[in-house]
Length: 205
Image (cartoon, rainbow, N blue to C red; front, side):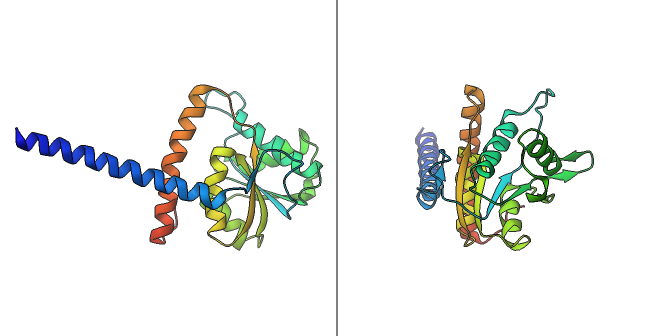
């Protein structure tokens, strides 16, 4: 009986430690990015470039992805209000699938953004790669990162730790409860991974 009690005690203690570490990692991300995300176009300072993080233009059902369209709306808003001069659309390009091209076409034909200011980054396979390529490949450090707010915090964490003068402009979130709670839960874990990668000096794949 004592062995069983010790096992349960160890499990509960381990769970408490894990929860504490998760809370500390998320607090670090929030602390490092505090005051650097914006929801109002009138409040955000101008930067040279907007880096729009990619997502699929369509859901699995085939309908338009609201996360995609809201990010394009936010990027276009930055341009039309004179907050940025160039837009880098960064996402995955593979056989039969091209996020940057979809973003570029939407910005041109749906949002009225001039084609010549849009740069396609076809190798933004994840958030970290998009951030690093913006800095190292396109030589842009003064950026406004465009994504939903839950995602922007992690993106800014990567950018700030890579010496980029980055801000976040939060695209409108999707209001469906199942999407909200799923994304918040997933991002909480992703922030823990981001902190771990940073501490260990590992580049996320």
